[in-house]
Length: 439
Image (cartoon, rainbow, N blue to C red; front, side, top):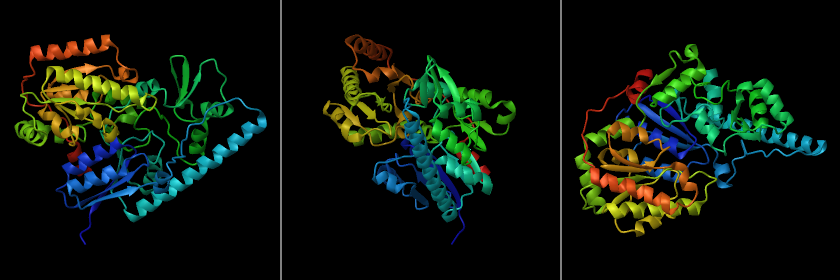
């Protein structure tokens, strides 16, 4: 059997899955490459399997990292620990319980990672991130010992500010609140784990997890930024490139940090160059008759946001768009539940697309999206007409004033028209070629 070069991809989210599948799609004709993707329990594994089948890729293996955890709906590693001042006996009991639980989870993770690496020895490991302290830490642990190159793929933009602004991230206490003993230990052994956000002091992760990770060899020097552990970091965002360079320092970034196209950019360019054909295919598939191809790209709903408010606002957005345009294509975030969003198609002219956004955005005449969405870079790049609404407005039901403001933008887009120039796109280094050169 022909020897193949294995690229191992560590996917801890559906966004990561889509990004890695984009890369595999770009390299599908390279018969000398085998792809292996390891999935975190939160990944929608069946959806990932269906996408791989549609791609028709024979040299693609999908591994469920914690099948038992998925079946029991338990992901105990990193479970949130709520600090509460207890008497000494209870505090000691909690400490022992957390230490045993985290140590056992880390041991299981190391065993699974070692087994994957033994069964499919990779030539390189692609990561979504190296600072999440989840399943990727086990693979980085062995990669350093086996001299396997680890690379962060340019999939999504993240920054310390975005992590700090999300109240579900990290271990948080008010500035005047006394620190638990475990957090005091973390301040000593890992001082860069702590940052400030408004009136809160925020530790990157739960203190017990930080302590146990340090003891078990999973120490991250600067967990707030990409590149503390990986051999190379690739990003498609200049602002993230500059931020990582500042955080790591020029010397640590030299030869390790690269500004490239994202893993999806090549597919977007293909769609942009073949927009007429894609428009025709979309029109035939969804029965479109209007001149303008209008796309709404809905973002992920954050866990703490009420489901009913998010869905209510989506309905308002679709109805408002259909007041000004005959038809609209809705692209749901990879983490979205299709069934709960299916009600949108009851509005005449609304179609939820099955195609990934990267495949159709190049053909869009108007894109509607939230202001913190990562697709903003694509829209700017393609110089597509846009209507933007505030991301955090989706956590509460829109007021009449917010609806009027949104509809005012839609009315203005109609007056301006959505015809646009089709410039030659300025391209950066092709990430797929970057990977081939490393192989």
